Length: 133
Image 1 (cartoon, one colour):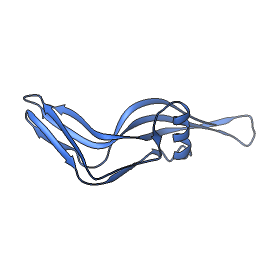
Image 2 (tube, rainbow, N blue to C red):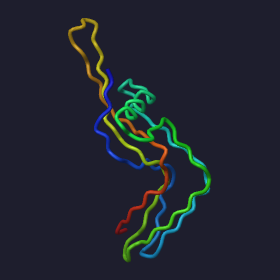
Image 3 (cartoon, helix red, strand yellow):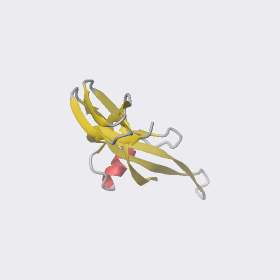
Image 4 (cartoon, one colour):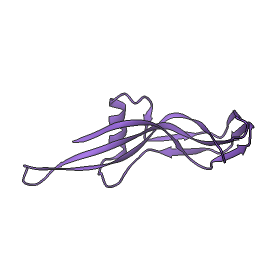
């Protein structure tokens, strides 16, 4: 039996983190194609396809095994004075807890393996945040 639960929204960044500031406006254009592959920690023994299927069944819209993006995406964001703007491109998705129950040979006990999943979806773009340094 497999269970995927405890979903939390997450931007799965891929590639460099860009930094600009203090203050002003940060403007970026991504020129390189890329991809993000959903993953499950290896110790659980649950396939990525199974975790994504479970996420879809539980209402995680757009969950996918692999997200790819094209070569051009522009982004602009104001940076507060005395702050630095940071941005990274990637896919918006979720992290989740994954567990698998295995029935032991005596059929009386079961063993639980747990791990984490990074599940991407079809929505992609820059994530922006501000820092003091």
